[in-house]
Length: 428
Image (tube, rainbow, N blue to C red):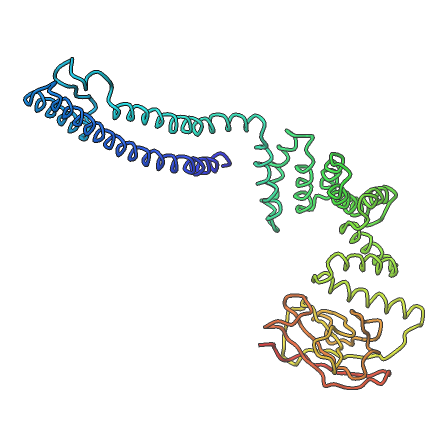
């Protein structure tokens, strides 16, 4: 396929040379023709003047003059009609047969110029494919171009086991033929992971990491290695897993996959301080993403858990009772976002937010200062209102088709307040 694409590109490139060249030769030919005609007319006039001078001097009589002039006119007519054979005078001893005409010399010069200006560029254009294709085939990166199609297919493949199996065969053969190239092993690991073959994925990622230089790319691959070693070790950070994590963090301390792994492990162990620390680093990597919104909610939950364990919970508390309207049936897996906002400052981020799912409704959500997801908390506002959003897109931003309910504004006075929200209306 690559070679097929190069053919029209070569033809297009050749046109950039041949079209201007053809136009130039056409212009030169037309100019040469005009020059030849002008030269013949000048020569005719010159010879006519010579004949008249000879007649006036008495060197020739009127009959000879008429004969010579007639022959000169015939020669001019022949040249104007572009006859290739030059017509000479009738007699060998006559003056116009003693030298080559200026028109003929001009035409010969034009032909020489035409040959050089056209044949040499044409030859160079023809030599380009004759040299380029063999040289690129010898020294080019055609193998990399071909394998990129397989890599892109891996990236584009979503939930298709048969395609993943096909790619494993194709990329595996390429990896076997090119054992010193890291990326075939990396994408082989991606396809193994897509099929749930985690041990095979770990082996492939490890081989890719071994072939890479200590750059950010190697840190990324080591993150994959650590993740699947963690999974294959029953979700435990063993000394072997920690060694891989340390090696990757030495190259890039903020590698995303490592931060996700460390945060997930800390959350599983309920080590909330470590989890919060890694979540905040992940938020810094992409502060406006959907992942960042979700992590802010997780941080608020973790902070509340820490506060409840230490008994340091202070400030207003909103007990929000959330339920669906009678008869309203929604997908149990849909996310529900509950948030409190400053009633006096519209358009600002929530002062506190939590999320749950439809399957958990009805439920009571507690919002407090530890539920803050931005720079301000509940204590920073005197008057607030509460909302509940059922999001089909799984994000906290309302969109058409979602279900949402808003409470009236109220003052919390720094105390505990109960609010009831019944979800019933769909956003148009």
